[in-house]
Length: 202
Image (cartoon, rainbow, N blue to C red):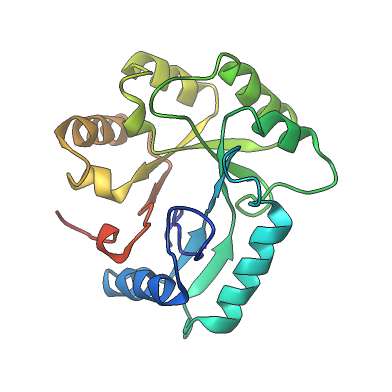
């Protein structure tokens, strides 16, 4: 089951129409996936992506798409930016997690926020298990030693299938494979924004 996808249409830089969403699902079926977690971006620059709005689009997807046994579930991918801590501390709206426990988070690939360690600590203090999306993409801001330390501190890693098979470049592929070889890969996801992102080989 895919752990990271942008299937829901019209809410981020993923699928832009129900037809796009269906095409991604069809591509997932072709490589043998039986279901997928929808993990739309939640970040400061997408203020309408609240949990309630994303649930509405998810319910539309369940009613609209031809799932035919394909297991579609809802979580979200939370950017650790200036909007994150207010969301984390807002008890009026629960965060969208995997099975109520694991919270998918990401960094900007350009730079780390000054309080990123505090944010991860607070995620854990509230009883969530942080799952870092595509850690192999952060090689320019976190070296291997820093990534290993994060994993030792109970941050789970979700590596992208596209990285492992070389679709994101050699440096990213090398780090993805190194993390997996070292046992630092808890989950694999397609991170599919379009059907062509869903491949089992480059």
